[in-house]
Structure formats: structure tokens, C-alpha cells
Length: 177
Image: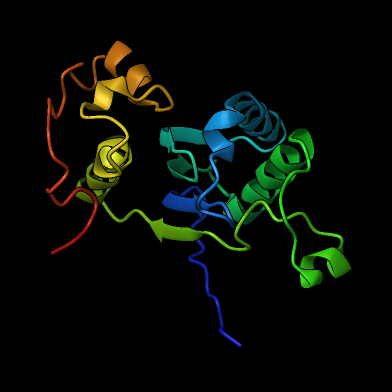
């Protein structure tokens, strides 16, 4: 059995990747309002800052900062996953294990997390979020993907609207060499 260890850094900033169990489904974009509501409700009860976020059909990436003294991002993801799952129709196929446990088959059980180390690391992961729809061939320009906090950052003048222009996503956004 693997021994999963999570970084504990109260008030820290993390990059996350959260995947659907069936990566062929488009649940996240097809039910974007349910996902937004799940995130909104979770933030009301357990605040956190969304520094960057992009939602693709089958997975999402996010950069979050938690409040000082708080390191429980796992609770927040659990609540988001539960609220989203409850809000969408039951159309998925379930394994006998999930049926026996009374579980839906929407999300992969875990998520990937990376503790942001410095400003360069932060910027690299924010850019990775924003370039991701281009990387996956969903759009040719970052600004054309609607489910991204990129648009919020453009309004705040943190990024120009034509950031990354028309690109092929061959660059190394978020990945170390």
C-alpha cells in the first residue's frame, strides 16, 4: 500500500491537479455551474484564495493560498468533490467496489498537489494553468477558453489579453527541465 505524504504548510500556496475517474467524460465543463457552486459553498465555510484556476472537460488545475494557520486543503477538495457529485445526474458506470461502498464514480480518489516554493514557481504554475487548454488542443489561444481565471487576471491587468498569442503548446509551462 502506498504511503501518501502531503506537505503541511499553514497559510501556504499549492498547485493542484484534480481528475475525473473516467477521463473520456466532459462532466466538469458540461456541469460548470454545479462545480462553481460547489467551490463557492466550500469557500464560504472554509476560505481560501484562488490564485489561478482552469477547468477542462475531464480535469482541473488550480493554485490556491490558504489562510494563515490553515493547511487543510484536503478537506476543501473533499467538500468540493462531494457537493459537485451530489449536484449532477447519476449517469456513470460504477465498479462493484464503488457500489459496495455506496460511492459514485465521478472523481479519482486522490489529487496531485505541489507546494509552491517561490515567486518563480508560483508564476510557472499559474502559466501552466492558463496554457493548459491550448496544450490539450481545446483552443489555439488562451483567451478563447472560457473556464479559466485568466479572464479575471486580464481584467486586473496582470496578463495582457493576447498573452501567449496563437501558440502551439510545445513550451515547458509549469514543468522543470
